[in-house]
Length: 64
Image (cartoon, rainbow, N blue to C red; front, side):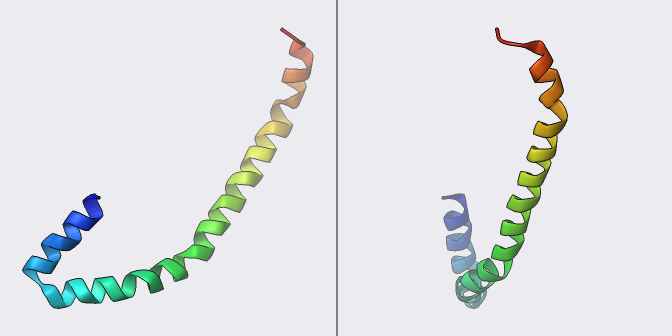
């Protein structure tokens, strides 16, 4: 909602720039999509490493 309000303010102040931002937003989103997927993959690898490293402590602790 805040982004929409900022865009409306930009539309009032400088409408050509607001229309350019409106047209470029989907293109920028498509360009950044692979980087988001890469970030998800890196996060998954770190979570797997954390689970592997903490497994012996969890096994030795036993059931509660």
